[in-house]
Length: 227
Image: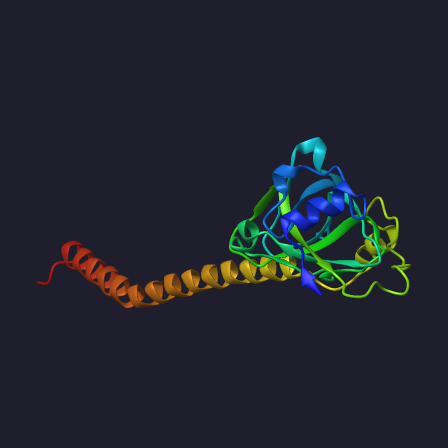
């Protein structure tokens, strides 16, 4: 089994052995194909949910946020070709990591839904129809006895059960943990400032007391001069 070159991918596409719907030769690389961001994205932070990227033109993956994003292209792999999903280095260098299964089995048909996580220091924007993941194709030395028949066969959108899994989740996401830690850090800083101010006040009390006593004594001596 070896990775297919652009020449082999092109020949397989021309012979209809391998089918990529919405294929664009601009995104064909020497040994892979870059898939573009499709319409759907599901973000796990409360209040985000399932959205249509095409409406806003861009999806923002916040710090510590997990999201499932669909590809614009759909694929039909024969029994003698397998695929491997990876992330474009453009996004990997910004702190995005891919968490979905890396292999596309022979016989798979449908769009790909890719799980990604932002572990970087900034929010990351993924524009609609922007290439965000890459797919390598491998030619099997012997075709598989049967093609893929799993639950994601012929999918045309992000599966509802994947969405339900996160909607029903009760644990805190990494983004929420980061937000909580940030809030705690701010609270600690405010407390530290208050304590420092209090220390300054306590230090100033004896000085203020001495000044007040001196003034009172001076006034008394002026009002009641010594004989």
